[in-house]
Length: 385
Image (cartoon, rainbow, N blue to C red; front, side):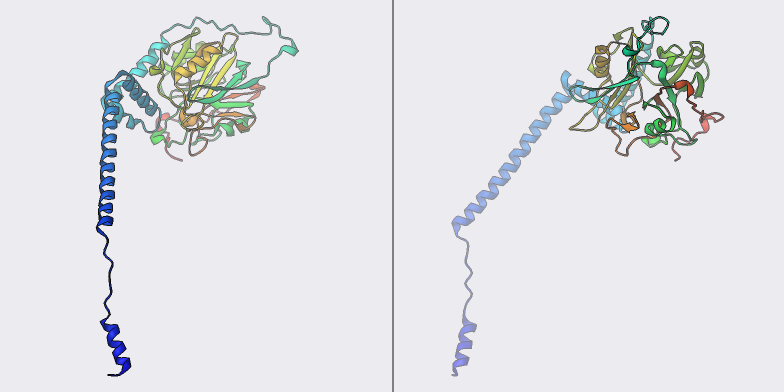
């Protein structure tokens, strides 16, 4: 046989040897698999036990229930209000909202004893060296929030501003720049379908320069009001438009609640503080000084937000006699010297709004046009951009 044929045959006859795993390695692999399965089911059991314990605490204990309602109240003030039903149920959600509005109405029943004593040049001469700046800004903070306190030393320097064009709201920063204001904050609420409204249609009443600019009800329909009269005194509570005109109210928007009356806080605890959220609130001290609390929120690592009870405590510490809530949430903004100096919560940037509180050096010389004049409120489309 030829040598090359013999070599080829031998190669063909060579067997491939496959190394089998040893019994010891196979046992180790089975043990590892078994350990992983055991760990998985052990972890799952722990999580189920923790979940069960948390559910029992969350739904059946007083502290858990308090947290649950606080979370529900927080959701009520956002565009995800319907989510609150998963925490407290649809029926309880409706009851909760109704209870708050009844509570707000109860706050208005406390009579204002007019404890604010306004300083005037005739009654309190002020030397030039003692004159305070028109506005001052201080940082404020609490356990879960940070914000600014805007102090306006002359209440008569405040005006309610409205958008410059028909059909769409306007950013507060734009109003400040357009009208030449020193500072500005957001003011009243507005019709906001699906939280995507154009900011043009206010809710309730708007008064600027002593004239009614907008009224979606009758002249004898009561509204929750936050405003200032001709003497610079803050007016907050529930009033009819006819009453406000008789009282000489110069600037006003609709929002609620009034939560400090005669220097006494009406909100008794955190549970009644209407959830944690970005806030804008207004107050007045005994000497007439106006304060705005602007609280950032919905920003972990910076500021989660505050309850109205938190704001009430801040105002009382600063000597507030009267205080009321304004629109908040994504609308909350503070502008000073044409710059936004807080951190608004809106992911889309500063919102378009129908009203703002602006501070002016010479408010009497400011012309604010009534863009709603001649319009039928029922025919305004707040969703059309």
